[in-house]
Length: 102
Image 1 (spheres, one colour):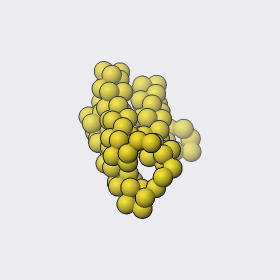
Image 2 (cartoon, rainbow, N blue to C red):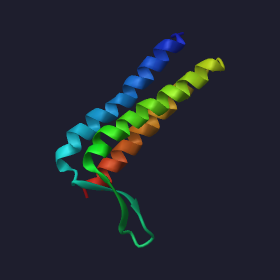
Image 3 (spheres, rainbow, N blue to C red):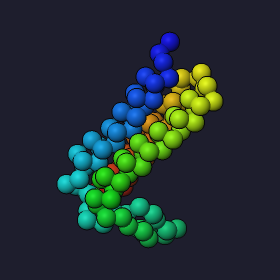
Image 4 (tube, one colour):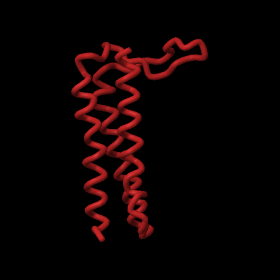
């Protein structure tokens, strides 16, 4: 069985892949990326493109490190728990890029 440190490093690298996704889509994203939509389907909140490209991946890595530290601190043995945050981060990033480029 892999060590906890290996799972933390691997899950953090997976979270960092969101930077590759946002950098690849940077040219297609508008200057103001829609981040929230109202009931009518119109965008009601926008973030600057660079905040999305660099801020979202940074937040994903930070959240993953906090969650992983908590899991390691309580001796979590279920390996899948270390990979929930990266999975959510990658899906959320893909959705943000998809909706931002529409």
